[in-house]
Amino acid sequence: MQTWIRSAGIRSSGTFFTGVALIVVTLFSWSSPLTGTPNSTTATATSVDQNSTNNINRWIEIDLSEQLLRAWEGNKLVHSYRISGGKRSTPTPIGRFRINSKYRTHRMRGRDYNIPDVPYTMYFYRGYAIHGAYWHKRFGTPVSHGCVNLPVKQARDLYNWASTGTLVVVRK
Image (tube, rainbow, N blue to C red; front, side, top):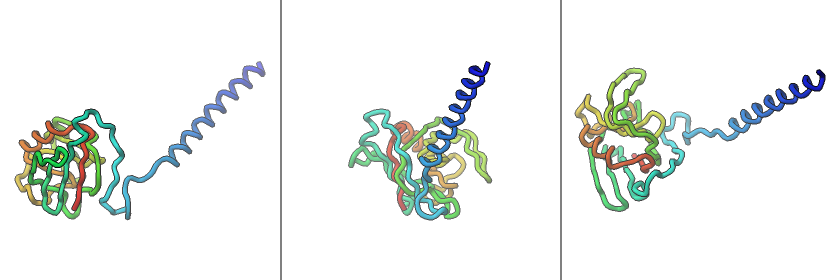
C-alpha cells in the first residue's frame, strides 16, 4: 500500500514540476512584437514559412505617404493601386511582415465598427489586413482603422496573385 502511495506521489510531483518548467520556459521565450515606445506603430513580424516557390520573388510594398500599394515580382512592378491606410488616430503598422492568413470574406469588428463580408482579406500582422472595401470610395486618403483598404476588384486581383507567406513591406 505504501509503495502505491509513494509511486503516485512521485508521478504527481513529476507532473507538477513539468508544468512549472513549461511556464518558466514560456515566460522567458516571450518577447513583445512592438519595438520602440509602447505607443509605437512599428512592428516586427515573425517569419512565416514559404508555401510555394511563387512567394520567393513576390512582395507587396505599401507606401503610406503616397497611399499607394505596389506588388512586385522581383524588380518588376506587377500591380499599383491607390489605397486607404489608417487614420492618424488608428495608424497602419510600419515594418516588414508576411501574409499569415487569407479569407475570401471575413467579418471585421472593432470598438466602433462591425463590417460583415469584408472581401479578399489578407492578414499580415495581428488584426491588420489588406482587404477590399465596399463601404467607401475614398482611396488615396487615410480613412481606415489601420488596415489597408483597396477597391474590391483590385483587392480580388491582389488576393489571387499573393499567397500566404508573401512579404509585405509597409513604410511611411
